[in-house]
Image (cartoon, rainbow, N blue to C red; front, side, top):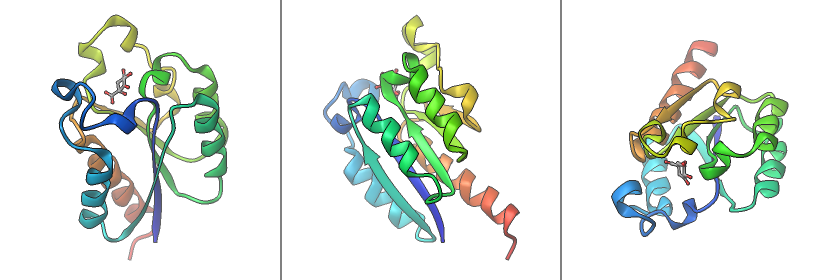
Length: 147
Ligand code: DQA
């Protein structure tokens, strides 16, 4: 079974109540339930932390355990070389997701230290970005392991 890990960074635990005009009204707990129903063939794990070092430790713990990671590093996207180094170090394909369109917001959100270490990025498509990333991994897995 395809195992994927969704990892959310700081302040994303507040989805549903945090700036709903930007991030929407849905909590991630509700959304992950929908994702699991939509993708029954995938073992979807979820981790969230507000702490940079915990996110790095968690990325390290994924080595040998999952085939892909969907990472929304929140504001650490724009600040953390350490997190970007962790993405490079673990050797697991990572897709970067942002709920909002970071390129249409403040200038400091236009830099991602993580993007160049990832397979690709989805930004501005709301929570659907996570589903699109899951679908990407399903499609690439079926190319790698045809039935
Ligand atoms: C975010 C965009 C970041 O700039 C911001 O700091 C977040 C959320 C997004 O999903 O749109 O916390 O990653």
